[in-house]
Length: 445
Image 1: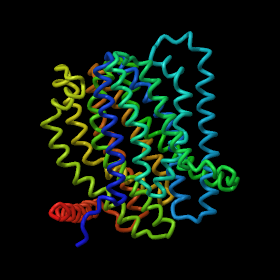
Image 2 (image 1 turned 90 degrees about the vertical axis):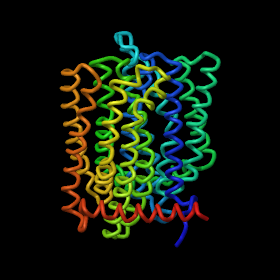
Image 3 (image 1 turned 30 degrees about the vertical axis):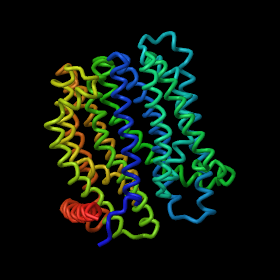
Image 4 (image 1 turned 180 degrees about the horizontal axis):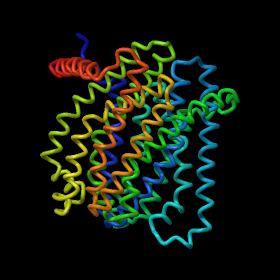
């Protein structure tokens, strides 16, 4: 039997996402020690708004880049990437224009967190453009080794500089924003210098290809933006109905969910590229197999994670929250327990959406996200107004997930033969056993 290869694309994708997630958790670990609850909440609010804008750019072009670039010829590839650069620049320019239009009204705004967003939004968004394009290209090429390097440079440098700021007792919100911008520029320079962003393909752009990508991307744009709004709705509701301090409490379990996002992002990247290649070869059977395999493996992998989270939630939230006893009990650990058990079904829901995109049904995926967003916002607002705390948002999660899972599953069964819930579980069980045997064999040797 072939032993497990730690240099394969799946392991490198997992390692890359693991690095960014660990650095994310470490960043929060130090930020909660350097900033007040209000400043920490303001930082998370800024990241949320920036993430919403980035989801417009990424949503428009990530899936489209993978779909049209993966497995193509050199000439076609240059044309696609040149067109992607053009569209990415135009989207960024529009977003920056909207931000600049808000500057004259800054004197009438009394919320500090909103002022921070207006001042820092444009320059931060521009600084991430080469990184984003390099990421889309590397996912399509399945070059997870270089993606790992980009993440080490960007996130590794940021956590190092934050530690230095804290050591020098200069850990203010303003300085954190400067560090974030500087590390983005450093990683972008690396991507351009190493040719990872494919800047030289811009002259090869073609009007027909731009239109083709834009036509496909309009649905994935709506889907991705709605999905980001879905995940960001909690932040916005808590910030404006409760307070940034309440957001700081809610963000602790959310950040610990990074340990779920590590394998999710990794498997989504490798799974989408594999399904895209199969779709380009009209291999429906392989699309179904890949979707069931990845969703099934992750479903089984998340079960022990949920059990560990149930017993260790208090320790985890207290440790991440600066060692403060107030985070060991109450809302933070209980929300973490709830989210971790619900996360067992995350893989099936995520791959339902990704598969719909790959088989050219992005419009259905968009409707799926709209259903989830409607349920999430409705239940969250009602919950917060009724309970007056972060539990009001957390209780919306299971309702939201089940709505999206049922909607996506129903439509996939209509379009793909052999796609069943039982098949996902069976395939996931068989593949999980195979991976376990390979890993054990590797360690024995």
